[in-house]
Amino acid sequence: MEFGKVDATEFDSIDFTLPPDDVETQRVLAKAKGQGTVKVYTGCAKWGRKEWIGRIYPEGTKEDNFLNLYAQHFNCVELNATFYKLPSVRQVEAWKAMVRPGFLFCPKFNDKITHKKRLKDADELTQVFLKGIAAFGENLGPVFLQTPPNFATKNFDVLRQYLESLPGSLDIFVELRHPGWFSDAELKRKVFDLFEQRGVGAVITDAAGRRDCVHMRLTTPSAFIRFVGNSLHPTDYTRCDDWVRRIGQWVEQGLQRVFFLMHQQEEVYSPELCRYFIRKVNESGFASLPEPKFANES
Image 1 (cartoon, rainbow, N blue to C red):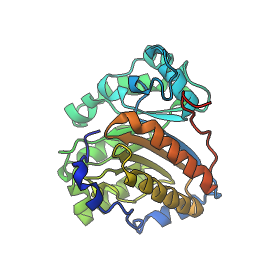
Image 2: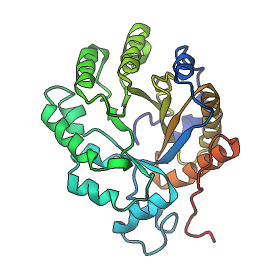
Image 3: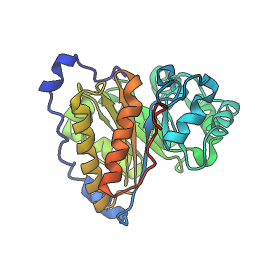
C-alpha cells in the first residue's frame, strides 16, 4: 500500500501516538447505548498472496484454495478485488461458497465509480456493483468507498448527492484522502455531520505519512480502521497496542463493531501483525477471537 508511505529512515522520528477522540465521538457512542460487548472483525486486504505459502498456507497450496484457507484464519477481508473489476454475481457466489458462516467480505467500490467517474453519472455502474455484491448475502460486510487523493472539499455536494442516491440499508464507510477535509475545520465538521445523518461510517486510515487521516471521529457506533504497518518495524507493535487500548475505551462507551484491516508496505508480513493484534484483543478481554496458526507450527 503506497498511501502514506515514507522512507524507512523516518519511522523513528514520526509521532505515532493516537490523537484524542474527536469531541463528537463520545456522543455518538453514548447515543448507541452499547452493552459493553463488541463484534471484532480483523483480516488483511487480500488473500491471494503466494508469499503466504509456507506461512498461513501449507506448502504446495494451489491458488484456488487460498481463500478457503484464509477464511480459516481470519473472520473478514478487505476486498480490493472489486475496486479493480466490477464483481459479477457468478464470481461473488464462487467466493461466498469458499468461506464459513460468519466470515465477512468488505468490498471496495469499483474505481470506475470513484476514481474515473468521480461519483458523477455513475448510476449504471453503481447498480452493477451493488447487484454483484448483494450475492454475498449474509457474508456481506460493510462496503468501503475510497475517494481519490485529489477529491477535494469542493466536491462536497457531489459526495453528498452520491451518498443520498445509495440504498439507505447499505452498510457503508467512506475514506477521505484529500488533506483539505481535515485541515478545514468547518468542512471537516460538515462532512462528518453528513456521514452521521446518513448513517455512514468514517474510515480511519493509520499510515505513517498521513497522520491527518487518523481523525478519530466516529459517525456511527462502528469503527473501520485501515492500519498500514511498516514491515514489522517495532513501532508496528506499539501502534497496535495503542489501538487495542483505544478500542477498549470505545467499547466501554458503547462501540458495537470494529473492523481492523491490516496492510503492510510489504504485504508478506500482514498475517503476522494481524495475529499480534488478535492476541492483544484477546488479552484485553473485550473480545475473544480464534488465533491464526502458521503452517510451520504444530
